[in-house]
Length: 311
Ligand code: HEC
Ligand code: HEC
Ligand code: HEC
Ligand code: HEC
Ligand code: HEC
Ligand code: HEC
Image (cartoon, rainbow, N blue to C red):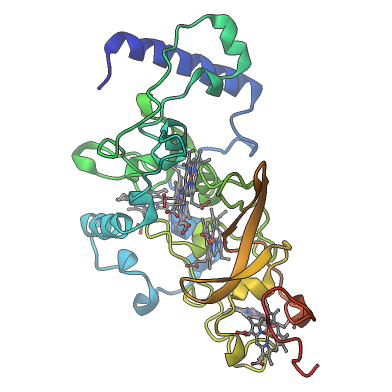
């Protein structure tokens, strides 16, 4: 823990900031969410609550015979193996406090620059935070970032957003999408992909596809498109087993390329920088139902894919 006097200034500033932000309504571009004390997966996926349970196809975390502690323990294991449990990063200058805002919110210390301009007139003395947080102190994205944690580490299943870690102050979020987007940018920046427009999936939330704790998602295993291959649909052929679904169904005009690690032909973000372009693989989320063969099979394409497909 850090020195007391510093913390008091820090909290005073945070509170002033919060009051200011709330007054201006600029905390979030989404409308204020009404309180949702019982938000859970059943409510979020409204329709599915009316269907009979199917124990075999439900994730282990949800099997009816598990009690609350067992569910929490299973979720803990899922989380332990997720990217949210291993989010330590450094920038080019070997610093990371600014990164901690999303990569380890409990460690994050805002700088003067993070505060709204009006606050400079308050003339607070705010020490510059340590720019470097050591790996040993890094807390990643534990349960309490998304849930209130009570005594004996009991995790409230309703999800919320830990707005001010220092005060353990939470704000309600209406959907899992609103929660995920506290950190998952809607616009691209540096080597970060943006997820803005879900195209044909626009009525879905992030956790309709992603497990909130492993973070995994799959077009085929989510019970949605498992029978879509080799059904006579053009493009759904063995020749395209190394082509990602999103490479053909992208509606956002993303770049395409072969990813060396697994030979998959998939989508890429391209971000202009001062030194040129920063290109990295990122799954398109902006999808459409149709797809055009000549998006890839055109004469002189940069990936040396055949232009002769007999069409
Ligand atoms: C990044 C945010 C996030 C983190 C971190 C997180 N959860 Fe969750 N959790 C959620 C969301 C979102 C849901 C709702 C899932 C849904 O609607 O499918 C949820 C649901 C739950 C539920 C109710 C689901 C059920 O099957 O009953 C429990 C219990 C839970 N989380 C426990 C935990 C525990 C324990 C941890 C830490 C090991 C944790 N969560 C970490 C976001 C998170
Ligand atoms: C507190 C910020 C935060 C929240 C909230 C959050 N994430 Fe993340 N998420 C991250 C960070 C940071 C990483 C990258 C971790 C790393 O590898 O360094 C990540 C990684 C991921 C990845 C893997 C990305 C990859 O490149 O493979 C997925 C998928 C993911 N999150 C989904 C979700 C979903 C779904 C939710 C909402 C339930 C969510 N996240 C909520 C910060 C967050
Ligand atoms: C606005 C929230 C946010 C901030 C700030 C942020 N990140 Fe991230 N970062 C994420 C999320 C979410 C992911 C995972 C999904 C993705 O790639 O966009 C991620 C992924 C990464 C990855 C890829 C992780 C992996 O294992 O492949 C690196 C590297 C990374 N961030 C570095 C940084 C650095 C360095 C900083 C600080 C200069 C930083 N990030 C600041 C949200 C953020
Ligand atoms: C229609 C289903 C679906 C929805 C909705 C969805 N995702 Fe995804 N997402 C996927 C699939 C499938 C992948 C690819 C997973 C893989 O390759 O293992 C993915 C990949 C990702 C990745 C990793 C990208 C990469 O290539 O590095 C991140 C981060 C992510 N999703 C975050 C989110 C967030 C945040 C939301 C909500 C705004 C969201 N997703 C909504 C299906 C979905
Ligand atoms: C090589 C390109 C290609 C790949 C890879 C591909 N698709 Fe398609 N997909 C198409 C084409 C072309 C259509 C037909 C579009 C139309 O009818 O206009 C289609 C149609 C569909 C449809 C609509 C099916 C229907 O019954 O109308 C779905 C759903 C779909 N694809 C999902 C997927 C999923 C999931 C994957 C990954 C497993 C995938 N696609 C991979 C090209 C592709
Ligand atoms: C997103 C890019 C993409 C789209 C769209 C696409 N393909 Fe392909 N196609 C590929 C790739 C990649 C290969 C494998 C080529 C390789 O590995 O060199 C391939 C291979 C093929 C092959 C085998 C060619 C050979 O010589 O072995 C045929 C035939 C084919 N595609 C037909 C189609 C048809 C028909 C459509 C439209 C329904 C289509 N493709 C849409 C990327 C695409």
